[in-house]
Length: 535
Image (cartoon, rainbow, N blue to C red; front, side, top):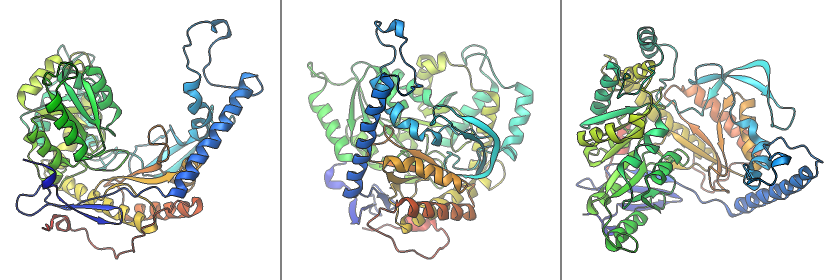
């Protein structure tokens, strides 16, 4: 059994949380280190003031637009339809008109190369304050790509994967033109599903053509009226949409907080359904392996212990963790050394570590057989494209070592090394970095709205492509830049990016951390460092 009295020991080093499990029977077999440094008070106040000033000027500009003094380019109701029910809610577009539009040039940048370790960007300019863009005809070459989810470097146009995909494209073509249940079930699809099941260590698996739909269309098939879904507050939109479409009762627990989850589980067992107090038909816990905005890793040993104690079901979304975590690249289950059969529904995507598209669900054979006939994504969606199937098969066999090489193993090791190095160097520079030490998703806190756009632009001037994120994708005072580390990044590339980040950090005064870590000498990565146990 698992309770609050059996929590792993917690040590507080500044704002780092270090969880150790005992060597004999503990929940954690390795240190579990995550950092979420509190926002400095002055920075929080200035951030709120920044949004307040932008809001005031936004209302002023809306006043000028309403009186035709300033031109407005956004969609509006036609004058002759002003008495109709509004199609466009004017106030709901306030943020888009007055805040997002000012920094819109940081997103949707067109690239004209393989999204590998480096990319080529199509240069564009705006003459109307980012309402429209024009291409200059110039290409910005060799921009270091710190934003793509290319964790293992399989997003490439040469090598064994690219050669196999080209061969399959010539044989099968690019599309299928039918669903799996009709004329779209290829031998490649069945080979892929058997391989995925073997890779995950489960009885059976099923592949889908779209990662987002794997969640949004399959959760309604697994839960419905009379069921309870317990969802992490930072779950991806696809999980949230799937939960809402299911018609189940949804309750949200604090991010990665096991006390919050256990309280909801206990209350659900004790009180049952509202009004009738009948027992819930089923309780389904929804969590992710790596949270793509926080860089945190799910406390899976504790979640599984709670799930077993309260007889709930566990749905694990490994979109970002599969391939990127664990000594064998098998995701967060492999990372913690757990039994895959303890997870009832294992979901993941092929869009990141495998350099392809689509998603999968793995589990018991009865589960997969049920989904084949009850999932909207399985019954109505067009089958996965043959070249995409081959990309997944080839890259997965490479990770498993079944291609006769050690390329996959070396890439997993390289990603782990790059992640530890990149995170450590950023902390030494004085930035506030969120997430787990082993997570290749690295959020760097920017906070203020004006600095979101400035950071993205200044980094691009230094030939570094980054992703910047603000409200409403994050809490209003927690805007950030999000880096994604790849096995394809060399140390020289990371050093060049780190040098540019440090320079821009000084320029924009982003080094907010009050817990500066002293620089340490570089040493070879040693995985045994993370396997030491302490009582």
